[in-house]
Image (cartoon, rainbow over the protein chains, first blue to last red):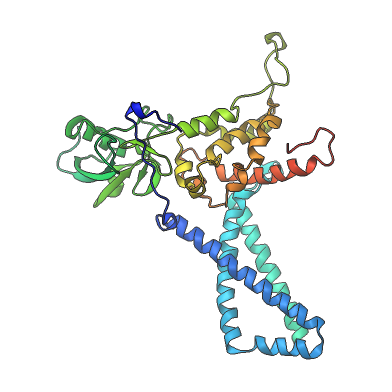
Length: 137
Length: 251
């Protein structure tokens, strides 16, 4: 916007510094986005595991051993909490990102979309857990 | 008349370009009754306490979209927010965030109006249709596709809610994209090809990081975040379709 000097207008533009602290909604958003770092970090842990597997039995066993260290367990607990929070908030945003889903001519509600997403991730997590546990023992 | 026994402190952000270097809060003690809105509180100030206070308003019933303000830090229509919800305590009223302040609670909306014009917010026909051909027919399910997006009253609360617009005012923004989507979804409209370049552009939908606050604050229950995010998929489709269709999308 250009304002002629002679008009006496002097529009004031406010700073955006610290914008995310202004509102609890923004703080929650930043925590949600921040927990994505843990999702990426855990993907890296799994990738390293894959690389170690390709390097043979000894490397793989060393990787498994490293996972059992107290530091690794603390990391896993924190990551579990962060990823659970990320999942929870991610599925709450999901209805906002999808085009209308029609079931028998009726539009699926936002709450139903969120519930299905959370249920799907819970069921898949349980299946994965049982499978991995089965392989382990 | 307001019951003078009950009063509330209203902290109002003042900015008088001829005398203030930057905006300052000014406090007024305002008598109020149970049914008084924040807008009525401001009107009381203007009528009885300080005639120099400037703010926009018109309909007093959440349909004109003029009285959008930051009320206790949240974007809201002053006519749809009640003083009783802030007692005991005080209420802070500021100009709509992310827009330059012209004076007091009045913001500069040139940017919004320019963007509104740019999306051609009207039905674009393939060819002019003479009256003799009769009216357009549309089924309820065709109407249902765009109906919620047509409830937008251009109040700009979603812009005050969108940090990405605050950080980059070139971003087309939630409300305008919701209206663009409304016309693209309309079965009578043939203007999608003219509007998609705006969606795809540097200032288009990909500025959105799915904060989602725009849809939370909308006083008419429009879901602009949905319009923006659905158009991210549309934009990608538009981009890749150019490889397989002769006419090509995503110019």
